[in-house]
Amino acid sequence: PCVWGNGDNACNSTAVEDWAGTCGGSAVLSGCDNACNSTAVEDCAGQCGGTAENCPDWGVENPDWYGAYEFPATMTAVVTDQDVQLSDSNDILAAFDDEGNLRGLGVPLSVSFGPYDGSVLHEVALWSNNAGDNLTFQFYDASEDAVLDISEDYAFVINDIIGDVTDPWIM
Image 1 (tube, rainbow, N blue to C red):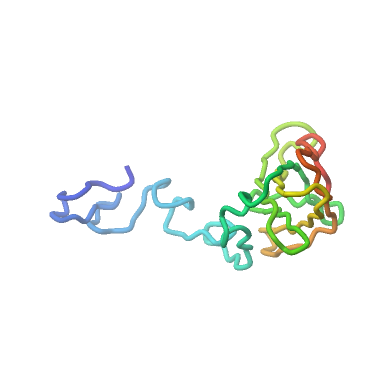
Image 2 (image 1 turned 135 degrees about the vertical axis):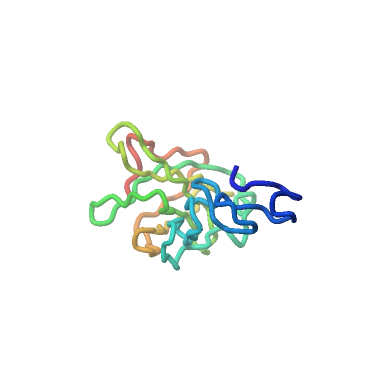
């Protein structure tokens, strides 16, 4: 367990001992405090003790945005910059309509086989109410703490499947 006791305990109070035995202390046992396994704080990009400040809040203001759309499509994409793959598990790929509404938010895929073995691709569930809607993309590069505009766009096709882990759509 991460802490000793759970109420009336060796501290003679409701305080709990930390792993070092200090009543009400904050010492942690690896794996018990947070994702950093320490008292370090994750930045917005998920880096322990990091300094990222420009993480996008895509979908945060409306976590049910996808419920506003009837039809799906799925895209598996690789993002490149001057033919160099941008590949970080904390990167985020997002799709938007012409009015700036969020239409898809990527999930990083750590590929363990094929031509993209050892890299991260992005699977994006795209949503729309109409075939032909124009979607544009933005990419959060966690290693640079920057949001990049992607030059490629996509005309929505209902139930489309674009790319896969062995042959992703190149952006």
